[in-house]
Image (cartoon, rainbow, N blue to C red; front, top):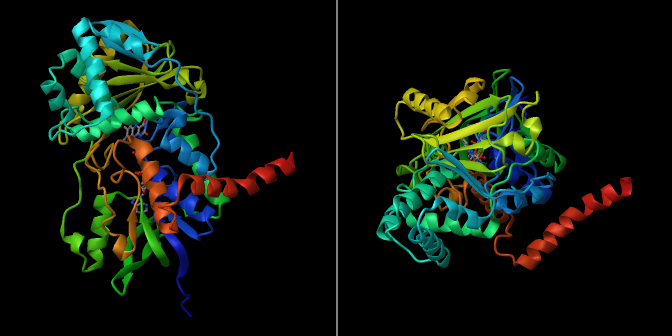
Length: 458
Ligand SMILES: Cc1cc2nc3c(=O)[nH]c(=O)nc-3n(C[C@H](O)[C@H](O)[C@H](O)COP(=O)(O)OP(=O)(O)OC[C@H]3O[C@@H](n4cnc5c(N)ncnc54)[C@H](O)[C@@H]3O)c2cc1C
């Protein structure tokens, strides 16, 4: 006799950071949650594998854009993940005109601005961005209108290329302003001890503790519908090639707006937004991971490169956690944006020329562990910063989007991914409009049993 399909309160498509945060928070509130992940590992583009002695990042270079104070770190804590995210001791450094200039404080950034006019302009544009205001063009165009010099614009541009995989001329002014406000509010990047894999695995464990069922190596092949709503999915266990069906009250998709839209269109649901193409322009990039016996950057923050052909910045992640490279070597990661459709092999050659320019003979002794290209079909971001889908276009048919592609304004990368997941969990649980006091009380009440349990075991 055929058995009835399993039933869950929520089915989550994808165990990326967005899917796992939503899963943990819903399960903590008592919901029955199933997470289905196509790959053999969790964390999606924010994880890593041990390769040649290093933590080889699947996507992200192990960094939380706002370190221990940002929305991602807060969401991790609320999901029950305790990890150390040391604050960087240095603001940043800059490779400019063949020199490496380290800025330990915000004021030291002025060292790379030659004249008093540039220093003043930098303060002026930061202040105006912080105060607010609107402008129709890109942040880069606005800087030109403000008469910012090439050097001032280059600083913003390299920041955008490294942190957002887009240029300052492609980011809408309002979004650039919100990004600056978020940096001023939450602070600078930080690398969690253990790197991206520790974050993903920590979240996975927290989700399991809360009662979530996680199925890896399982692909959501199709969505199922009933009475004009999505009511479940057809799953394929990739290792055993077994197909099954599962039912759920809500579906949360961590698979990106474009492919969720495609899955919905295949259901034949008659829904007004399905006719529109909601694939925003992606952010495409190229990352080089290098292992070096010698330390090439002597601080724990990003070295922005103002005098290179392509590389926007480099981070020596082992300065924060030496275990990200197990054999005592240093792990450095460079990043650059590339135009969709550009010849990535040519971009790789230019990146390697940049490495040789920056480190000269020291680079000869380095090992290039990997060059990874993230094209439009597997991008750095499904939506370029500022082009995210800012509504929940499928909520009325029972499908919610979380993660990359639906980030709230101003929040970069995993910060926005985490915030979107928390917002959706709150909306589903009906907590979206609670006061901060109620929210803190609920978090405190949820954390209490764990605290008591740890205290009792000591
Ligand atoms: C080169 C690079 C560098 C980056 N650097 C940083 C950084 O330093 N800091 C930072 O914060 N962010 C960084 N990012 C961005 C960050 O990695 C992403 O924003 C984030 O990981 C996206 O998380 P997500 O949960 O939205 O999606 P994903 O990580 O893409 O997770 C989605 C998951 O869904 C699964 N899935 C999709 N479709 C299906 C299906 N049909 N069935 C089952 N499973 C499915 C996928 O396998 C995947 O595991 C970087 C990205 C890249 C590529």
